[in-house]
Image 1 (cartoon, one colour):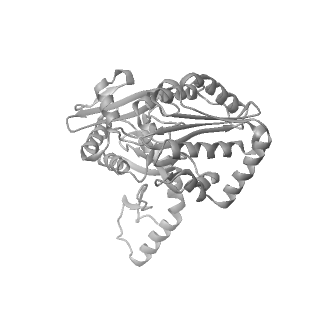
Image 2 (cartoon, one colour):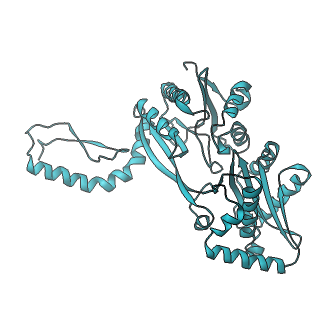
Image 3 (tube, helix red, strand yellow):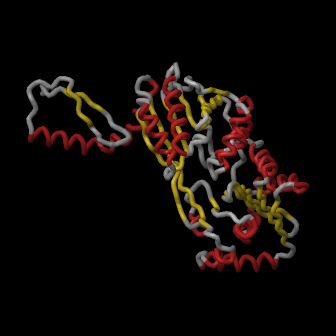
Length: 398
């Protein structure tokens, strides 16, 4: 593939390339690191997903794009490629895509994917940072490859810009309602008796911390994890890297709330939250969040705290800014699967716009009568930048 190498396991990628991408520090998000991606592939992959890692390394730039090929399902003629990402992933995309050299490498990888045979019917990249240069690079590369590209919203992402403040300064900026709740619940917790907070980064306390987290998770309102090995393995991985902040709050000697935070490149990501439903009235989760905030702001001195996925209302109280993660769905209209996929994704939007579009066509016809013969002449029903449908009509038929 024109100097681009394809691997099916991270273990097979040359170590110097992985080290080069790690050293480049191309992302503040831990989801764009080789260790994270390797762990995701090993512990949280569906049986019908085959890993395809596209790599390009040159003197002036290197890039790696990890993807999944999904086995054919209901559509035997459909060949689908998607980002190596799932509900555990806050971000996806290429590694090493900085600067013009990195962007050029990404464009070459996309071109190589489009040239593969048999052809891919669709390529799905998500979730991507809408405000980053990589989004535009990928979108244009897919269009240049002749694919029909549709943008789509994935989720909102709330985050805090610390701005060099101390925790006390940050706390003073919180909504008064939240500050009053935290103060009131703190007094209630003290009245409950023995309260203990542990923030575990590794060492001898790690395995007990994992057991406490799993116990709390089972007693919470959350559904069981579909891949039970993923979270314990992630905790151990982060502990080896020095990025783990596992908070466990005990009330009366019992684990009441637990949170997994990951500190990477100056960003503290709030990854997993859980509390025992028996302690809901004490707001054990909020008390633990405040304590974790104090630690990452005053001790770790992070520049940003990231609440990752979702527009939950409570996140707005703790965070200062919001951004969005979007996806790119590209269809290859040279394939049957690509045509059907494009119709399936675009049809709802087209149908919503169809009455207005047809009305415009009829009005245009009244003002400008067409020649007697227009057999097969095409007309654009919708002018949407992402989706358009061409219909053919014959004006000679009354």
